[in-house]
Each structure stands twice: as structure tokens, then as C-alpha cells.
Image (cartoon, rainbow, N blue to C red; front, top):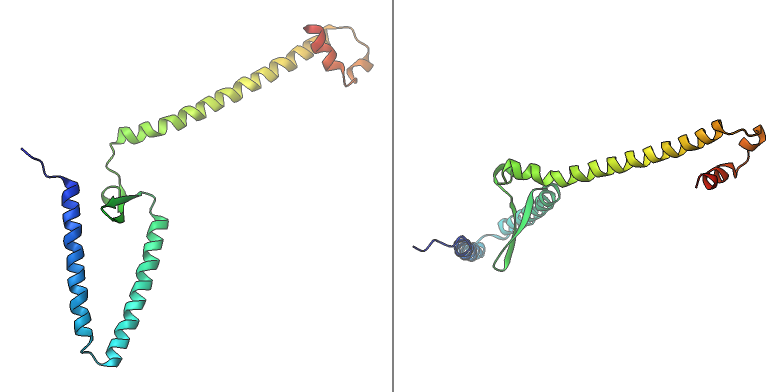
Length: 155
């Protein structure tokens, strides 16, 4: 049994919609020729205002809609929401699983930081142990190369 192709259905619907729009525009254009000049000017002005409002609304929607995706259908492209009511159709466990790599990255960075801090503490403890266990004159503690001497002597 053949299943209906949703892509074919969307293209057919798009074609019908385009035909209807062209027929409607043609009939409105024919009726526009019989209107008085002042009425046609008011209609032209209202049309321009509506187009400006629609353009600004479209720009605001594309800037403020994080859950939209670009959908290509034939030669036309349209922005479509990824689900109903702004929610995507993904299961909850899949959404949580997509956050897991970020959490693992943060955990790894935290462990690296703790390891570096632990190494610094151990190095400082080694220097302090060497200072406290050795008999040195007080002037040696103020020498800037003293820690280098300690690290070389321990190796």
C-alpha cells in the first residue's frame, strides 16, 4: 500500500495557494480600475502601510523566535515553528541528553582547575618543608633565586 508523501502534499498545497493568490490579485486589479481616484489613492496608501507593518512584524518575529527553522519547499522558503506552541516535538529525555555534553565539559574544567590548585598547594608545601627543615641564615629567605635553588636541589 502506498503511503501519501507529505512533501508532495505540501508542494501541491503550495501550488494551490499560489494559484488562489494570483486569481485574487487579478480580480482585485480589475475591480480597482472602476474605483474613483480618491478611493484608489486611499487603498494604495493603506496597502503600503499594511506592507510596512507586515515587514516590521516579520523582522521582529525572525529576531525574537529562537525555536524557528528555515523550511525549503520547492522554490519557496518559509520560517516554520518547530512544533506547536513554540515547543519542539523532541522527547524530554532527548532534550536532557543534549545538555549532557555541556555538563561533562563543565565537570572536566572543574576537575582540571582542582588538579592545578592541588599541584600548586603541593609545590608550596614542598618549599615550606624545605625552608623549615633546613638551617639557613635569615638573609637567604629574602633572596629571589632561593626558590629556584630549592627546586634544583630537590631534583
